[in-house]
Image (cartoon, rainbow over all chains, first blue to last red; front, side, top):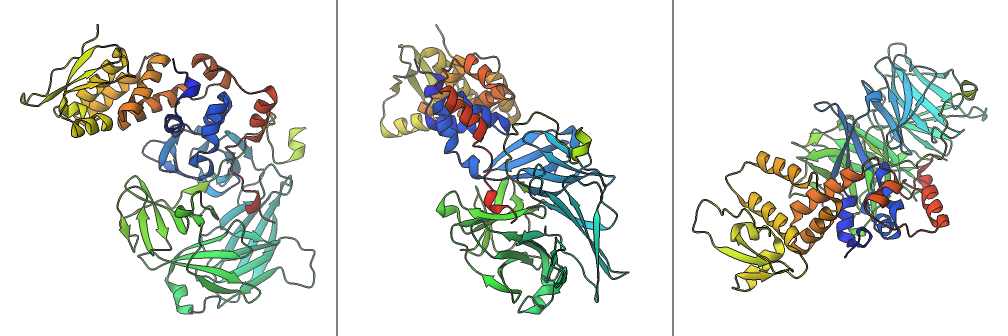
Length: 357
Length: 167
């Protein structure tokens, strides 16, 4: 008489592959043998790609070649602007902003709306942290002004900083990165802007615009998509540019203080997950699965990655292999999301401390 | 006690095999249905024997698996019909029945049925408390209270991206 607890690991793995979100936590807690399967599951260390399925009015999560569907009535008409630490920063149709944790169904409303013109908005540190800060970027080419707005945890008003622009400037859609206290973001030609989030350093300018960052400057006009990111365990900043209509992949490392892009041809056992709302690099679960870049693109129902070894786009579970991305399904509004820990607190989360008293 | 609704494909000339359960019941199955199981296919390729004895699957479970295989081997049925058959196949079954089914799919290597049953079990566990799962599946909690509290607290499923944090 075999027991549920003694099911072979392979079978438990198949069952586990059909379980999502907090039900996985339940699965681990049932008994030791189930937990043993859970701790070695590839699902534990694979981020999810989250996107809205308009046809079904549901949100789809793609993870390690499985799809999970969830319904969130509270996310009606909302758009993912930034994704980090298992949290999404979202904006409503009226430009209201809120944080949402889809795995624990927690929402934190923000006290102010995003002003008109802020095309980029991101956040740093988890929304539950006192260090959490939301940053928005707006470019007004007509007035030649760049504006950066900041909202610190607990505050209810944007702090707005302005910088005069000499030339036309178009900010890229790639999410900004916070690196050694500076905010880094790109223009559409791959040039870098840094902004000091704290104003304590009076002898240095807060805004620094660096041009001619690419050695082959003409490439700048060919960039169609930009992804700026950090890799776990690496000091430098990295960028991936997708060039031309065929989306040729060029990866670079930022040389500082020269502020020049240096070409990267190989990332070893690292794997990159890139999307407009979130991009990051980690060590691959298996070494053989390293040196890859995952984009929010599908071939049929199969995820597509770019292999730096072969220089081609491949699909995970069929024979697709091409050196361009023509014909792939592109999910521009999708975001990679990692799973946030289940909160221990039961009280409602708020942004401003005074709101809870 | 249990016999399959072994109608066989309409093209009558197809070969059949006999499969015997651990409790001695014999089932006549068309070869086209049997080969949907990877293990049966292998056995049939290796030897001419038309009688296959399965020492660890009881007659009740085997009858269900064979009904499943026969349906899926029937070219006359559309994919939609097969899908709704799958849905009905796993619904309303007792947990123990599902357990023997999933174990049988493992032995016989019937991947699509294994996935169907696994999906059903995942659906059963959806939004349930740990205590409910343990009770309904009759699983002994073998954690010490400290170990359980530790797992509850740690939440191993959460992604460790501390090093990716900003400064």
